[in-house]
Image (tube, rainbow, N blue to C red; front, side, top):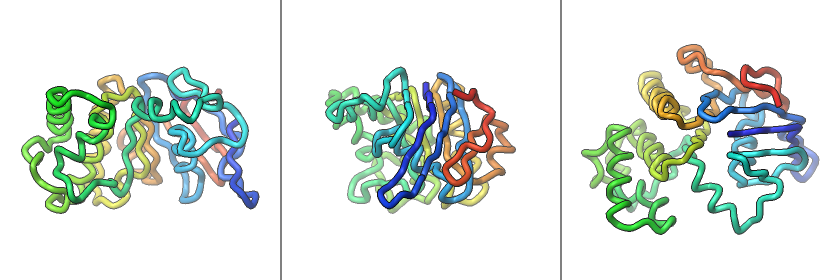
Length: 223
């Protein structure tokens, strides 16, 4: 699903955010991307979603070589990737239903299909009864669940999360991580960036550990 080979990312001014990173995350696998703040976790996720481009190396996602991916095709790639952020990025002037529906509306799905998929996604994260509420009316954990529902409503084969439990207490964090685990058990490839070692120990998933932009340890396949 994700093949990273000798990947480098250098920003203007000479800062190397990633240095010669190589690994493979197999289709249907779940792994934690870990390391201290500034280790390169968010940079790697940005490269996988083509928010940014690598400086050198090869990055293949779902069989597509992103180094050769044309700009006009990027929206189609992103429809195959669900992305969950730490700060939810919800639209506070829209209902929970409308927030989750947004990716489907952009993709041009029919109204009946949108309604069916949105309610199915909300049901999976336990928020079906709150579809008419607004984000401000929900707790932080519930808002994160809305973000997860929005990420999976397009039924992507790959789900990425960038520090999704950073603002939550331990109990809510466990609930969110268990949701990612449940999606993985249904065949979704999942990569979660976190520096919380407790989750890694509790779920006992493979890890990809970065330090100062370099891969220092991994229990997934090395490319």
